[in-house]
Amino acid sequence: MTAAPGLASPGVGRRDAEVLAGAAILLVLVAAAVLAPVLTPWDPTAVDLLHQHESVSAAHLLGTDHLGRDVLARVLHAGRTDLAVAAGVTVASAVLGTGLGALCGWLRGPLPAVVLRLVDVVAAFPFLVLVLAVLAVTGPGLGGVLLAIPLTGWISYTRLCRTEILVLREDGLVDAHRVLGLGGGRILLRHVLPHALGPCLVYSTSDFTGNLVLIAAVSYLGAGVQPPTPEWGAMIAEGQHYLDRGWLPLVAATAAVVVAGLGASLLGDGLAHRLRTPAAGAAA
Image (cartoon, rainbow, N blue to C red; front, side, top):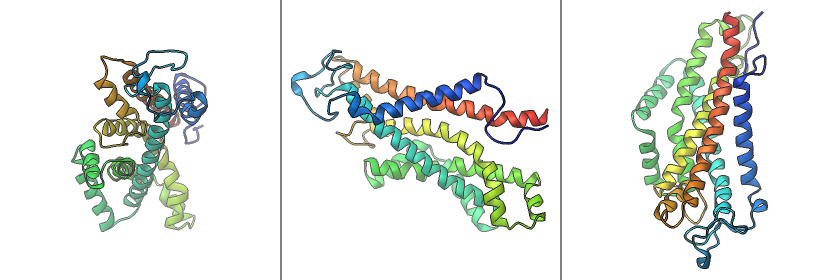
């Protein structure tokens, strides 16, 4: 008896624990970001030069930075920006790339060939270089980041979705539904594409991690989210300049990026295992 395809696998094991741990970490971070005004009373952009570089206290649980701003408030509010932007650009890249991949795997003719050549051209350049090139045209800021990452991050989804659809075509799934009299569009949307989305979903978790780091990197370089908006990468850059006066702003922002990336990685690893388990059981 074969297991039904999907992300579910029997039993609760180490990989299930990874899924739960990763999801729990991300949920805690999202909740902390959403509830930031409740968790801390401080305005993350309010400057108080009389309380620069204060250490940990009851009033400021993570101290203050070089402008007297509460570090905890800035870390939590920065989570709103980084997590929301990372999720947004990941979804945009996934939708664009999966759609093009489905067309390339399903259709025949010049359109798939043109898209695949474009994929090869984009893949020939380092991702960060492409993002910075787009930002050089659009200018620094949140809008440029939201545009630059999806414009350069769709290619992996296109390759992955196309490969999955080609495999499904070779397995006879398409022919079986054609025999039943179903049209090509209905077969693709209702029977082929859903099977190809599992690997794309798993990849999106690692893509989210990469996008989170990328957003922090471009903001660290001054090309991403602009002051005074709190952002983890910008906080890391500012913290480096004043490391001799206080290390908490640098460490807190770095820890936030690491923990968020860890949560997404655990979730992705667990989902990948659960996706492979039914296939392994069927082969056995």
